[in-house]
Image (tube, rainbow, N blue to C red; front, side, top):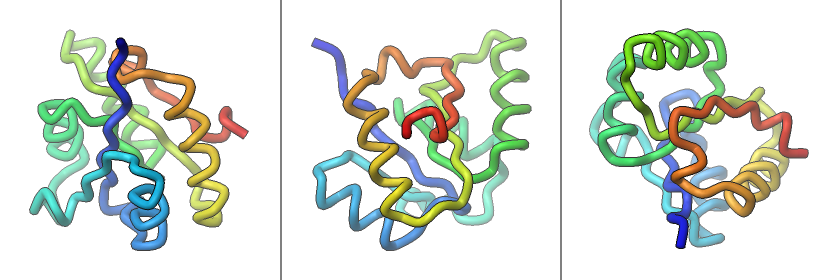
Length: 119
């Protein structure tokens, strides 16, 4: 059996409405605030998420695209990165739920996903 994706919301994506909606649907999600990592660098966020086997969700596409490439080039695995435009919470939730239903944690390993592909 494949493991479900466990999410980590960074500072950009840490909306209270998004967190409530995901938890109401039994999604395993932790925020940067809960991890006590507010103000940490994107690299530190990705390192924490990966150490916790959590796929990071962010609106910060550019920085995380660069980190994804740098980590893969350095042979550093991560638990996955999902990036999105800053859309209405309902749209983000629907797309995330489609992704979570279709992919396992194992399938997200070292992957960089655009949430816009999950309409």
